[in-house]
Every structure is written in structure tokens, then in C-alpha cells.
Image (cartoon, rainbow, N blue to C red):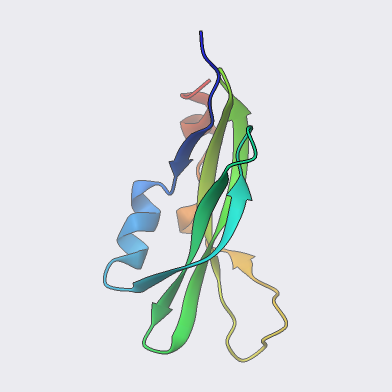
Length: 98
């Protein structure tokens, strides 16, 4: 049995939220062998709307990386990104991968 990083990414609810937005690779997460896995910021026009971030990692012959969206507050450029609840993987969904 070989070990590998499995990038699961965003769920279907998240994909619906970002439809029509422009995606730009802005940061990454690191896999089990040091490989960079790109994550994206999604833009409406010139304004960032959402940032993809790692929500959970579970193990199954290597890490399975699940991402979700954080809402960007363009008025307050200091960060403070809160999770977009609709984009989060539920405990039940994550358990199905174990």
C-alpha cells in the first residue's frame, strides 16, 4: 500500500458559491512529502470575496486535505476572515472518508 497526499478540496456547496468568480493562486498548504498544494483567493471584480483554507485533515494511507472558504472583509484589511458556514464540511461528511 502506497502513501500519498489526497487533496479533496472544496465541497459542492463551496463550488456553487464561487461560480463565476475569478480564482487566483495565492497561497498553499503542504502535503506529506513537502509538495505544495495550491489554494486560491476568489475575486468579484477587483475585490477579494473568499479565501480557500484548510479546514480538516484526516488520515487514510496519507493525509486527506479538506478545504473550505473564508469570507474576506475588504473594509478591514487586517484579516479576521471568518468561515463561510455553508462551505464547511460537516462531521458526517468527513466521517464518510474515514
